[in-house]
Image 1 (cartoon, rainbow, N blue to C red):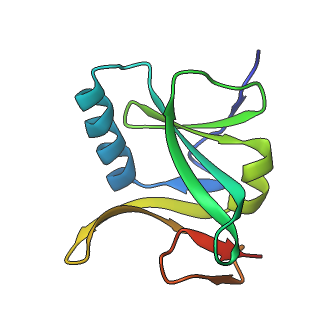
Image 2: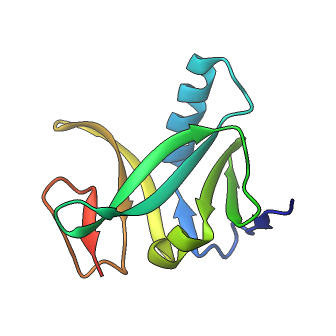
Length: 118
């Protein structure tokens, strides 16, 4: 099993410091340092595609792997085609705390921010 490693000096996807810090906090709460955050795209949602997040221990053989601040972000190759050059960020503001994906490939998105079209 070989994962596709990505050099963060020139990533096709940007995993922000605030997102990495929040993921690190969540993994510490779970008390399982083997956890990695998976970001994926599935069909559905009000705009055609939707983003998903899940914690996993396993790295798939077609996964792209992004490491920052001691945590790992995984994206499968199918989802990567939709997330290329996107930014995974974490915001904690007046409207609440949430992970945010800023995706230059999305031609439109819905108000909730978790659904998009290309």
